Amino acid sequence: MATESLYVNGYDWAVSNWNYFGAEPWLGDNDDYVYREWAGLHGWFSFADNAIGAGAIGSVVLYLECMRGAGDSKDITVSIQATGVVDKEVGDITPDLAYSWKTIDVSADIDTWAKIDSCEMKVNKKVPDAAILYVRRAYLLVTYGAAGLSIPVAMYHYNRINKIIRG
Image (cartoon, rainbow, N blue to C red; front, side, top):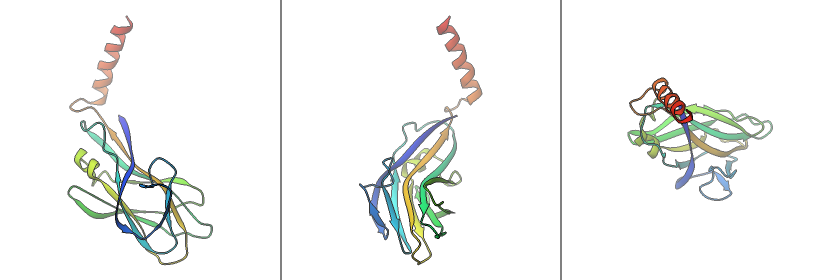
């Protein structure tokens, strides 16, 4: 199966309770980040549109690069929305002490190309305390196959064509 990474490329200012640094839309593939010392929501972040738009979707996984301050152990709750999906909490992540990637499988809710293109994410630190949480980048990883053609069959045809070309 093939994959496509769709980084954050927009922010709509609907909910902006976190402090943010870097260049808008933040959380893109540029090491910018937002952080918050107290409780609050922040979002909605949108993702780049896919370049494929066809084929069977195998999975859609949300990746967030994040970390927490020393002694802090608070979770970040992540919500998504898309065409037909309204502000749904999809899971909690607990950041490590150093930047690392955390994942949430959103395949059950984001299961069509239209939903992938309309998907937005927000983050929420629910506990009002001084714990510092950082989120630096986010993207959707879409795993997909060819439309109407299974991967083994596609590989068979690819290998046959490759053999013909090479002689």
